[in-house]
Amino acid sequence: RGFAQWMKVQALEELTHATKFYGYVNDRGGRVILAAIDAPPSSWESPLTVFEDVLAHEQKVTGLINKLVDLAIKEKDHATNTFLQWFVTEQVEEEASANEVLQKLKLMGDAQGGLFMLDQELAQRLFAIPPGNTLISSATKA
Image (cartoon, rainbow, N blue to C red; front, side, top):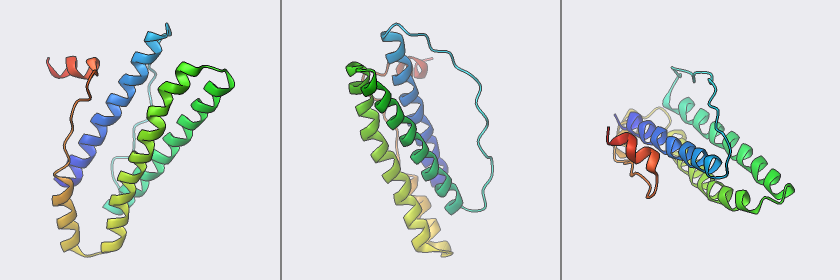
């Protein structure tokens, strides 16, 4: 239950991040075109391999955001650079959160009791709709 809860909250957080980008592009007069993406894997060998993949993905996202920041600076797009700084800070938290779980999994090894306790801990993670996120707020009222 706890690992699933962690992932559900993570998915909701990622949706809020996407809506921030969506709103920003629209606010700047751009047009958002959503394309299909490949489905993620649906099974892993262990919780450890899941969180290795989670951390690797967050590191990839960090790299992509950094490239956007570099482009905004090159283009002297100060508004976009400012907008992206929130994501730069957020990615530090995202990587730290994934790495914290990963390090706990590495530390416990094959100890089933430790896995049970970590599952209980992760079940406590909750999602809060960020203030001002109108796309998420309106979607939850349906």
